[in-house]
Image 1 (tube, rainbow, N blue to C red):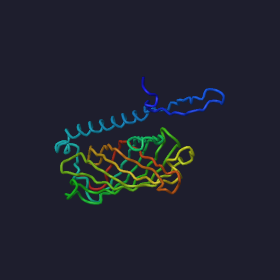
Image 2 (image 1 turned 30 degrees about the vertical axis):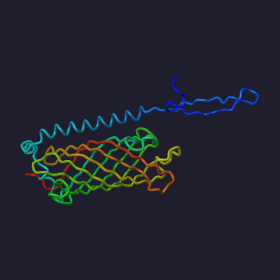
Image 3 (image 1 turned 90 degrees about the vertical axis):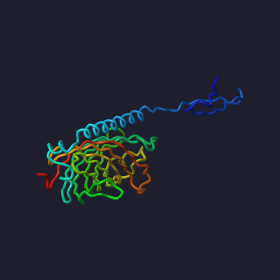
Image 4 (image 1 turned 180 degrees about the vertical axis):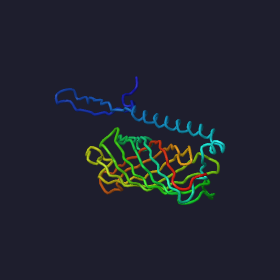
Length: 258
């Protein structure tokens, strides 16, 4: 017979009985909630998103050749030219917590963004990086809470993206990082300690790729890490660590392949 103290997730409280009765100390067992179902569902969703992304990348990589690029009317080297501009619109879903500090309160939200980009350099070989170029980006995003507390967040962010550009490739992988300012109504919920004020900060980073489908267009897939906190300006500053993904489309301005 197993010892009751060896059972996981049990809390014990001892109550002394009334005077004049038995002097034995009687244990009172209280079950502690241990529901990890929501966390497991989030992990599964993230895994499905990752596998789907890898599957799409594999399919596109198999079909990405110079012949296909010529049929589509453009390759990365033709479009990723210093001075060219981009307009990217996308939407996705972010989940928190997922991999970090999973004991924190849930906050899941959809994100819809509009990004304006400017190619700062021409593609070139780099010493410690793949061949590519830099892109400066301004982002305006609206977020709607799907699970958790509050209703919305609005963000303005500045991002720096590195595009991996190779001759003849219609696929352009990229990574980016940056930070923004977030206006929100989450702070009004006094039962939570993640977000403490109406203005918060949002460091973030992403991995993704563009698939060129013409002289001016691409379809994009991106995985994102999104943090929200106030840098200690308020006592409630536990912060949000959200992971998720988005799909998008990009239009290219400037010189195009003939």
